Structures are given as structure tokens and as C-alpha cells.
Picture 1: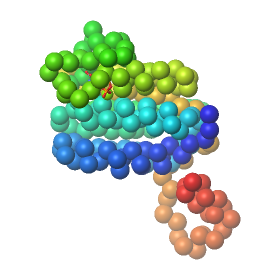
Picture 2 (picture 1 turned 180 degrees about the horizontal axis):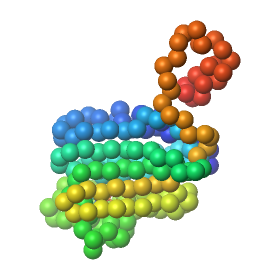
Picture 3 (picture 1 turned 90 degrees about the vertical axis):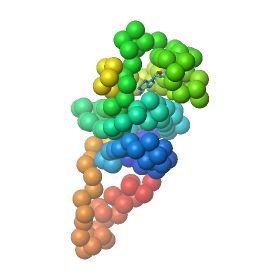
Picture 4 (picture 1 turned 90 degrees about the horizontal axis):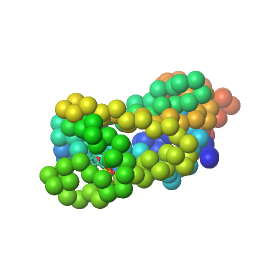
Length: 177
Ligand code: ATP
Ligand code: MG
């Protein structure tokens, strides 16, 4: 596992997904808090991509959010939507390959593999994964990631005069990585 600038990855995902959200009239709100986590970039990207794209695909009105919360030395990343929810009798099955709820009426373009990949990747990386869903209200997936450094809030606007201090150089290096 390596240190990953999660905020940078989330920013890229937001840029990729924003047109789909706009097309459906959904609000897409992705946290821009700066955070470093220990994970695998390729797997983590796919996990977040699958969860955000599901949220956008199955939600017809309201919003999709990605929120970050620090829990001691871990970071919880939650992807929540105001979509149809997943019926209780499907809640464990949706992680099975090819299982889809309402496969006859839902969008025909899915194979039912997205959540199976998410589940397997989270097990492989030992990132705890949880799902809370209520029909008619929405779904929230939460992943816990080990923090790579101190969790920092959004970088405050700094006056130009601080631009050349050594500390500022370090901050800029980290954020541009
Ligand atoms: P694929 O991801 O392979 O393109 P898919 O989206 O159907 O296809 P999964 O991502 O594994 O497959 O999801 C399985 C099923 O779980 C979906 O078909 C859908 O019924 C349900 N589901 C997944 N995410 C949500 C969500 N955010 N809200 C409501 N239902 C969902
Ligand atoms: Mg999917």
C-alpha cells in the first residue's frame, strides 16, 4: 500500500462524473478536504468510481454526496444518495456477481459486477466496507481507510508574503503531487 492524496483522486472523479450528474439534474457534492490515505491507487479509484457511478445511475432525483470523516487514525469515506434504496432481501446479494435488483426494469446496461468488484477489492485491501440502505430513502456505502498523515482541513487562503517560507514550500509540494 502507498500514500495516496485522496482529495486529488476525488477531484478527478468529480470532473469525470459531473457531466452525468448534470445531465440527470442531480447535485453531486464531493468533499475537497485534503487527506492522505494508505491504499492501492488503482483499486481505490475503481472502488470509488463504482460506488459513485452506481449512486448516479440509480438515483433519479436529489443528490449524491461523498463525505470524509476522521476516526482516530482512520478516515471514513461515505458515498450516499437519495435514490430508491436496496430492498432488505437484496442487501447481501447485491455484492454477488451478476446480481441486480429489478434487472427487468432497471437500466439494461449493467452486468451486476460493480459491487462484487468493490467487495473483493475492499477485502483484499482490508478496508472495512458497510452499506446502509432504506427503500424510498437512499443508500450509503462507507469505506474505512488508514490515514497516511494527519488529517488536514481545506487549505486556508494564505497571504502572498508566506509564499516563500520553507513550510509553505512543503505544503505546496504535497498538494501538487
Ligand atoms: P455494473 O456495475 O456491472 O455496470 P450494476 O450497477 O447493475 O452493473 P452493481 O454495481 O454490482 O451492478 O450493483 C448491483 C445492483 O445493486 C444494481 O443492479 C442495483 O440494483 C443495486 N444498486 C447498486 N447500487 C445502488 C444504489 N446506489 N442505489 C440503489 N440500488 C443500487
Ligand atoms: Mg454498478
